[in-house]
Length: 613
Image 1 (cartoon, rainbow, N blue to C red):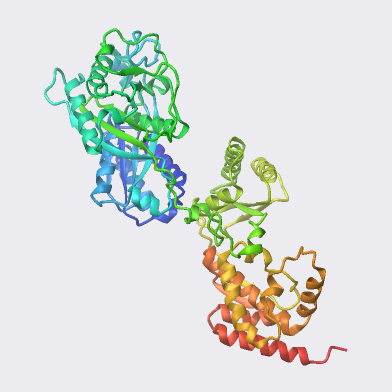
Image 2: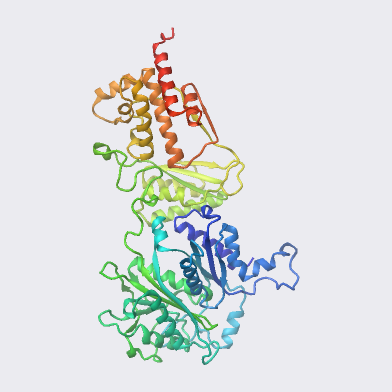
């Protein structure tokens, strides 16, 4: 298989996870794939003899069209899958096509990007014959010292969704594609030569598509390859478009990521997009490297365009939205220009699961009210880590340790939620349970080293298929009398609305059969200084007529939390003593009314029995 196909698969998986989406949950969805790549001379040609272990795989393993189709096949996407080869503009054209498909309703989400792996030296040889390569391998974009381009390799994938859908689905928005355009050089002064007027037209078309004027855009990530022919043509096109009518808006800042990573060809456009998204997020426009002085072949006085020879602050929140253009021009003559806009403020609704614990209250809320709200969040969090092998599990732990170290302000509950709901579950698993960041760091370090730690629980999917789907089944066992205690539901009641609502409902059914309301016995603070109240509750719960209804209520509410809040569905129910009745209700054999009547009558009868000798 061409490594370009494998890298696209890996980057697509990571893009989904970065968006907070478990890749296994979108199988069968109308998700599209738009992948830019240039076929490389990888492996034998179709008419050549292949090794015995690769026979029958050369066609699919090296075909550019299969690169996008393989992603859709692997993930189970049913939207359009399109491979794009317009040479160096491939990935930006792919993004443009993805946005068009979203607007047309052809897909609900789309992966767009590109990849380049130079598996043969052909591009080096051919371009050197055209005298287009820099002697030192550095792209000196728009510099007086520019002497050619320098090749690079890379992969990048973006997950694109309609803004309204992203906000409704609670997906974090990194930036908005405000507008885009694609055109062709046509009959210009040479098949491979850049065409300045065509570049101007594609920029103006993108601005019109975005409903913006040139002064509304702060910076442009240029194609900027560092060639003596292409850079001056592009700079003049930018001066003629973005460099005009900028009164009061300051100059257009101009840079090129190729000075950092080289010309990644089919991945060059997506590299520029990623750079500008990161610039928006960090509030900084990074400088372009290897610029001794601006190219003398450009009349820089013709417009307000300034090279980013130093890092420039780019803060948000100053009364106008920050925007950047990204250009990508192919040797084929196909030009693309995309305009990015900073993400809208508060782009994730506060009541979405992204701000929530499964089964817990939305951000800023509590299941109770008044004094109950002071209970706060639970102090212990589970973090779930899984992989397809033990070495991969240790690598996952190492990566998570590094991420937690680099981001000390991460909320522990948010991390736990993401690991549980936005990551696929595989056969080799570990659960980390801790109350503070230091313990999580120590547990991750131990897991990465393959060492035991009291906060780490190892598990595996019995008879697993490699996808986390266990061949074994799940059973819920309901206990009998003996584990009751005052305030046993306090923590869950004040932090998980699903549990609280269930407990309220069950106690409403139980209380008519009891002399004392059950809810206060279960939800009072076990750490209260009012020892008299605790002693009274303990005395009541020592009586069978209260102990058994209390345990029934607690277990049924816990079941609702697990099934409705955490979406855990058992295959079997079983129980001991009063747990048999609880299990019968949970399995749907007894209604809640029948079960509460049976539980209270049984408990009252047992209360009247003489004590055992």
